[in-house]
Image 1: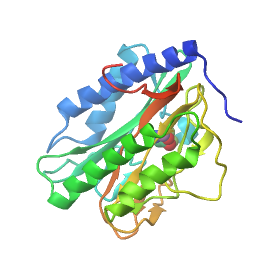
Image 2: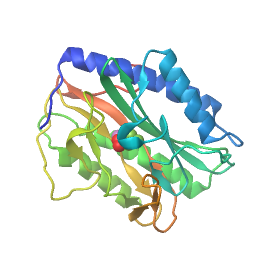
Image 3: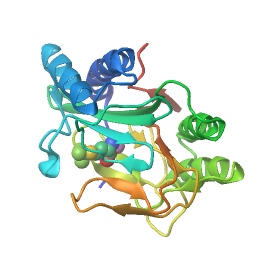
Length: 250
Ligand code: MF3
Ligand code: CO
């Protein structure tokens, strides 16, 4: 069941999204070669609490940290650890913030120092996929119009689109209906309506689209160990248009 949000709900999700964007800003300023993802996790955790929020991932289905920190061939759900980041790595940071019972979810992928040209192109294309998907989030369209925009841009550029994981409704809970796949599948394809709040999250690989979950039951990696990027925003459909709720300027 899709739970639509009213203006007040959306304002409250945006307040969570503002803290989330500030946290990302802080992490970005403090990331670099030599830094560990566990240090970033603590920084995010403490900042969110200082702003009156809660890290939405911490304890969710037993997840042990506040952020997901996915390096290089890790697609999503990387658990923060004590390994130092190195020049040429990429780091996908995924973060959920709950504020007074409302949840926002977003992710972005950072370059650590200078990365290879093909990796740079992957990040650029994945971020473009996110924005092309967002443009489609308007009444008159269906969810698969978002999926098609993401899928076509990624495949046109020769990249693999992860299909085992999807975007999702968000706001009252971390994961709500509908699923927002990054490619067209045989699942539900509801019409997009004003009041929908969605997390769009393309996960795109340089190589194969096939991924596997490691023995820790969280870490998702590409089976060919190719590099993978992830960008995500929480958006609301308001007055016939998509509005980003997890941007810094909102
Ligand atoms: N952005 C991710 C998602 O929507 C993060 C969930 S991680 C978890 O699915 F730890 F909370 F599970
Ligand atoms: Co999400």
